[in-house]
Length: 154
Image 1 (cartoon, rainbow, N blue to C red):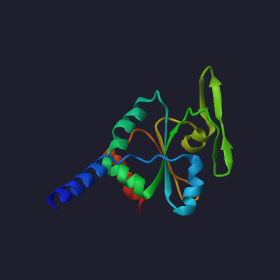
Image 2 (cartoon, rainbow, N blue to C red):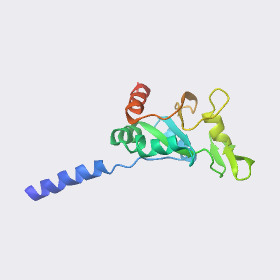
Image 3 (cartoon, rainbow, N blue to C red):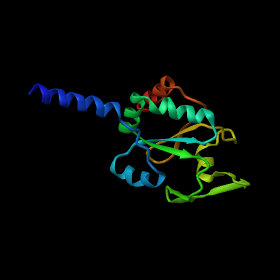
Image 4 (cartoon, rainbow, N blue to C red):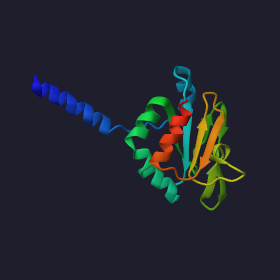
């Protein structure tokens, strides 16, 4: 009996310790919203942005943040230089090249432009009707991101 209890405790501890952040796609959101209405948090980044990469390795690896995002929000990890067409909210968005192997996705521009420019990383929060309710363009530490999530949960 003790071995069984220890095994159960071990499994519970390891399952929460290895909890992965669930990243959704824009194409999934419409059907997910029909099942359960949630706010959407879009993390807009690039591969070359060091602050974006830092958020990926710190903020989005924090267990408390992962649990809050997975249980209360839909999270989208979006590379602003994604080249595939994306259909979201009955509209198709495309990659817009601006030079030799350089460009930005139209959806990144739509969701991430603040004061007529896009500066990475960008956090864009959409309400249940896919309307922008919050945008932030800068690195957020795990501590600051937790505060943001707490305010969004109200």
